[in-house]
Amino acid sequence: MVAVLRYLRGSCRQALGGFLGGFSGSASGRPRPLCGGSRRASTSSFDIVVVGGGIVGLASARALALRHPQLKIGVLEKEKDLAVHQTGHNSGVIHSGIYYKPESLKAKLCVKGSALIYEYCKQKGIPYKQCGKLIVAVDQEEIPRLQALYERGLQNGVQGLRLIQQEDIKKKEQGQHVTYENKQGLMAIDCPYTGIVDYRQVALSFAQDFQEAGGSVLTSFEVERIGMAKESSSESKEDLQYPVVIKNSKGEEIRCQYIVTCAGLYSDRISELSGCSPHPTIVPFRGDYLLLKPEKSYLVKGNIYPVPDSRFPFLGIHFTPRMDGSIWLGPNAVLAFKREGYRFFDFSAKDFMEIIMNSGLIKLVFQNFSYSVNEMYKACFLAVTVKNLQKFVPEITIHDIQRGPAGVRAQAMDRDGRLVEDFVFDGGVGAIGNQILHVRNAPSPAATSSLAISEMIADEVQQRFGL
Image (cartoon, rainbow, N blue to C red; front, side, top):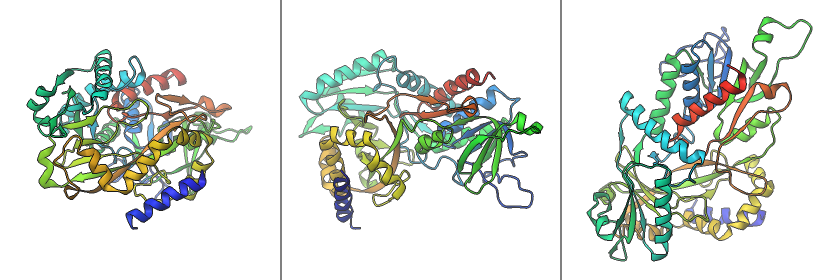
């Protein structure tokens, strides 16, 4: 297995050619505030600390601050800026909720969350476009899957869905270039409620709401240890009120009563700090995007997606308009050798060793070996990806595209190699387990669902901690 991974990684290298705060070290010892007008934290002790400054952590902190204005709440982020990883590398799609199993949390939260995101963006004046989406069948064998997906969307309560035929696809503005072998796409689901937005802008707005509600955002604070204050016969008032100690890699401390962790790519490692099981583990999958050159952007007006294959966990290569006017093509889905590895050659020895020692991942790779090799192959050779894109827009040639950005998805996986598709909450062992709520898995589409997820997390916090 190790040899296979090394070979694939080496071959592709050759083909390519080569959350918050911390202390500033000032004499005052106060935490350094978030850049860009953040209020200066007046304390290093909080009633609740949220670990993780991505969109889910910030939405949850905001929900808690609005629901419990009497509490002191802080957010800790290891980076110097907020929302720079999964949130900052997101495709920006506001999903409708069509893909997910009826009655599942993912389906309910996505449908509810998309409505909340649209409403929030209107209230805050955040630009967005409800440009719609076509899910297009280009082979006869895809049509039954497309029809089943349409029925699933209806069961999930997705607004405005239509199952349209070949002649209707041609009438759709965003479908005017969607063809297959010089013929129009055979059948499609029209999802008019799908949209696009800049999720980092949304997340930073959540942070502003949180601070205006009295919350404190602390950046450059990488959590390394979580524990209870040492018991002694002469416990101070602070020890009793704020019994949990959070230390960063520099040995600096934050004290609190309760912790909520929304650590994304590091949710498993943060959970283990309080004695949780290492499972589910986080497996990083990188998605590489291509960019359609500006002079060809007229070819794509709305989102264009393939019919998903239920055998695989990803949606396949699609066409995504962006708020800046660019068109993203992709992504693929390849195993990343670093949790924050946005470039193909990014590598972490620690992350790589975890990968090759993970028996569940080995099972997953062998169960989907041909798919995995195909994704690696597409990552190396643009012509292969272009051939797939041409099934939908034949006008695209290899001269019309260039390599673009990439994102890394935090995919939770159990010990048997099954991908965890729903939410996972955890605590820990001993006294510390009563003070912590770990959000170990907030699966895609977490950005679309972030406001709905934050309400669920706030409910869980209130019930678990008796607030």
